[in-house]
Each structure stands twice: as structure tokens, then as C-alpha cells.
Image (cartoon, rainbow, N blue to C red; front, top):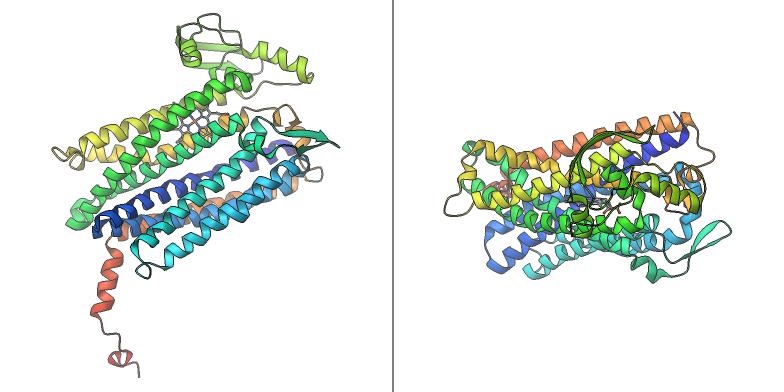
Length: 473
Ligand code: HEM
């Protein structure tokens, strides 16, 4: 295996694993903030229990997210030093602001939130968690501003072989950033809602063994989670549609590969539902098409043509010189369809879930198969996010910074196959053990349930606090 392939594999593995926890934390933090707001507004103790319970699960994700985020940063220095040199002047500012302001804000208020239950006023305590949400969303903003530059470079000049920033405002008003940020945040909101509803549904499968209060708390979680994921899933799909249209102009090769079209579509353009490409020969092996559909999806009307990869390849060759501009077509094609399909699934589960849990006739709680579907949907946002990043990052091939710097140019000159094999193995083992630990801890929290903390408190209050009573001396 080549150095570039191993370095890319490592970056993909680290990013995918890290990004399981980023939207998990942002999304569940928002859900927890909403629960605490409900507590402040209604004074209903049930919301306090829910806030604490889902807050514990959010904290687990935050911890693993920080650990994996640090490993993610190591990647740049370890395997991609020439790339770091090239974009250092651009990335320095947003990443520094992210670490110094947004992440500090997020972690400071998270600490305050954790340790000030019943020590400060309710409203102030709820303000802390809302500031955590704001901090986590600001943090994502700076990272995605940097990533958007890689997809669509703006506000720079090339000097001494490096990209130097000339316009900070251009960086944060990048059109790509607008879509990417919106899509990622609404995806995170969807994930938060689905996690709360899905995990609660899993617990409701065992409701015979749960107390009436705990069952009721899980039912409340399902409803609240579904409202959040309904809003999130509609928004993520809406912004995804805009993002798709923007790609037509900004990265036509990525667009054509996602649609599996080697040849120009003709007018009107048909949409390919399933297909397989022979990537070596640059041709479609088979494809099932729906007439007019691609014109409608691309331009919102039943007319208009779309360029195929062969045409885009000629244009890119004329502009940037001769090299292979074809990305991994089958991967992009199916990643796109799976991401969108999981989006539709989450929307349907949210809408139907809310319908089947309505006060009049909440049959969802009685039907095990429905609870199973809702529970299993918990995995959907993780997969949708992973497929999303695969499209975004594999699709800008052969560039790391679109049109400016290639993947081949980016890799560290002094890294070897052996060192990459070792670091890949170490990271793989580390991520596997972190994943197992994380799953184990979440399952333990779920088994304890939202009443656990209160039960413990009651036990401590009822027990004598005098050590002499226990015969300690
Ligand atoms: C109909 C539904 C959807 C459409 C049309 C859509 C569209 C897109 C497109 C076109 C991209 C590539 C953007 C680029 O490279 O510039 C993308 C990326 C991405 N998608 Fe989706 N998407 C949909 C659903 C979802 C869902 C449900 C999630 C997760 C909950 C999701 C998460 C992501 C992520 C994390 C990325 C990578 C970051 C980015 O470029 O925004 N997408 N999506």
C-alpha cells in the first residue's frame, strides 16, 4: 500500500470516529437545554430528572469527542505536514479562535453546569447549558469555515508557494460555508432528537421491568426527541437540497459522480436510481433511470441538462493540466443515496412516531415492532453523517484544497509505510476500545434510568451520616 493511501485511510478513520461524537454532543446538548428550559418554565420535577439523565449521556459523548478531536489535530502534523504548511496561514486564525474562544466557552460553562445543580438559581443554571450549546455551535462554525475553504477557496493569495489570507470576512461569508454549516448543525439537531427518542424506545421495550415513573419519563423523552428530530430532519434535507444545487457550479465533478453520470445528460435530464460504474474504463455498467427527475432535482423544473464527468474532466484538464480528475464514482453514488435515504427514514420515523404517540391513541408504546424500529433508527444519523463526509471529502479528489493543492502534494515527505502501518494499528485499537467503553457506559446509564440519582439521594438522606453509628471507631 502507498503512503498516500495509508495516510488517507488514517485521516478517514480518525475523522469518521471523531464525527460520531461531535453531532452527538451538539445535538444532545440542545435536547438537554430544551429539557431544562421546560423545567424552568413549568417547575415540573420530571423535566429536571430528564435534564440530568440525558445530560450524563451528553457528557460521555463530550469526553470522547475531546479525546478524538485531539487525535484529529495530530493528523495534520504527522501525515499532512506539507498541506499544513500550505494552508497554515489560512487555518491558523479560525482554528485559534475555535480553541481560544468557542471551545473554552463550551467547556467552561459545561463545568459550571455540572457542578452548580441546586447551588445557583434555576434560570442561571439553565443559562449555563444554553451557553454550552452556543459554544459547541460556535466551535463547529470555525472548523467548518476552515473545511469550506478546502472545498471552495476564497479570500486568499498564493505567495511563496503558500496560501495566505487576504480577506477574513470572505472566509466566513464563503457560500460553501453557509450550506455546510447549516447542513452539519441541522444534522446534529436531528441526531440529538433521534438519540433521545431511540434510546428511550429501547428502554421501553423492557417496560415490564420499569417503574411507572421511569416508564413515563422515557415516554416523555420519546415525544420530545421526536419533535426535535422532526424539525431537524426537515431542515437537514432542505439545506442538503440547496447544497446539491450549489455543487452544480462549484464542484461539477463531485455532482456528476454523485449522480453516476459519465456522459452529458441531455435535456431533460433523467435521474439514476441504481447503477454500477466501471471506474477503470470510465463507463456505466448498468443504470435504472427516472426521466425528468434530475432536471427537477437540479433546477426545480422539468428541463435543463447536467454535464457528465467526461465533459468536466476535459474542462478541468484544460484549466489545471493533465491528471486523473475522476473520483471514486460508486462510493460517491451510493453514499449520496444512503445519506438521503437515512434522512427520509428519520423524517418518517419522527412524523409517524409523533402520530402514534399522540395522547388519544399512543399505540407505539404497546407495539414492540414499532419500538424496535424507533430504537434501531438511533444508528441512522451516525451512518448518514458518515456517508455525508465521504461525499464531501472523497468528492473533492484529487485536491485537498480545491483547484490549488493536490492530495499527492499534501502528504508529509518524511513519513514511511511502516510508521503509518503502526499508527493506523494503534489508532484502530484505541478507537475500538473507546467505542466499546462508550457503548458500555451509555448502556449502564440507560439501565440506571432517570430516577437513579434521586433514589441514591433518598438512600443517603435516609441513612445516618454519623460515622460513629456504623461502628467505624
Ligand atoms: C435528502 C437529504 C439530503 C441531501 C439532499 C443531502 C445533500 C448533501 C450534499 C450535496 C452533500 C455534499 C456537500 C459538499 O460536498 O459540498 C452533503 C454532505 C453532508 N451531509 Fe447530507 N444530505 C441529505 C441528508 C443528510 C442527513 C440526514 C445527514 C445527517 C443527519 C447529512 C449529513 C451530511 C454531512 C455531515 C455532510 C458533510 C458535511 C457537508 O458538506 O455539509 N445529510 N449532503
